[in-house]
Amino acid sequence: MLMIGPPGSGKTMLAQSLLSILPPLDTEESITVTQIYSAAGLLPHNHIIQERPFRSPHHTASSVSVIGGGQNPRPGEVSLAHSGLLFLDEMPEFRRDLLEALRQPLENGTVHIARAKGTLTFPARFSLIGAMNPCPCGYFGDTVKECTCGAFEVARYQRKISGPLLDRIDLHINVPRLNKDDLIKKGDHTLRETLKKQITQARTLQKDRFNRASIKALTNSELSSRHIEALIKLSPHAKNLGEKLFSHSNMSARAYFRIMKIAQTIADLEKSETVEENHLAEAFQYKTKNFLNA
Figure 1 (cartoon, rainbow, N blue to C red):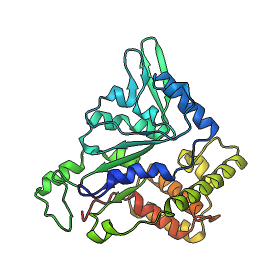
Figure 2 (cartoon, rainbow, N blue to C red):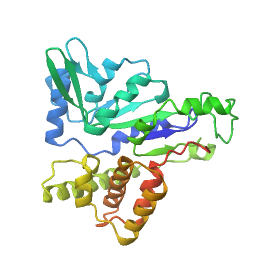
Figure 3 (cartoon, helix red, strand yellow):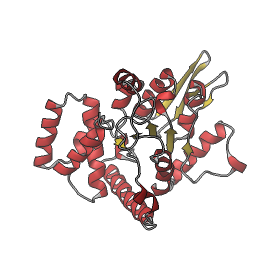
């Protein structure tokens, strides 16, 4: 997920709060995460890890520290975030080669470290959460403060995240400035538990679906294109919309299949046995690169 909005709009707070609505690690996930932290020398008190990891490297971090490697190869931040969240704040400020190196783990869920003595493979099935301002000054499209950047500066800043990487990010979300009423309004403390229960039920539906099809996967995001065609059931209206979107939007095949997985997840959250037209339409608008008022 990529969140775009002005400074102080709550992007970092939203990223940190996402962990609280995710279901706990199952036994297999917990063992794998514990093994990764043990290999990195970060296992706390030799205890098994039962909470989903949240990793947030600084934008000055090196490629080795984020992706993994070194003279004696160790897991990087992408592996330490396995089964959890990897948060990249101020995403365009990260080195270009580091951002491009994320493409492999986002696609395959693994990182391969090649050395003269051999090749090591570390698990890296994480959820990427990126946050960025819409322009260098941060206020392009803001309703209160005027942007001081020129059109060329805005375009150059937004191009720091390449098209192939954006293609692998499923949700592009605008986070507008909060007004005074939103800041002082009392929050709904039951919402977190409601969302967590809804997500847990959706995960259970997915797990049952994968077991019936003898597919080794935990979430819809891990499905291959072959599995998508076999498992995802589109209603006639959704199928018609999907054909129109693919033929008129110039999206890549990867983007099309990712949209299908998002639509299936939305349907699972609503406990729908088929993907309906509204599920597919919502998934498509999340996938569209949509900077504030751009």
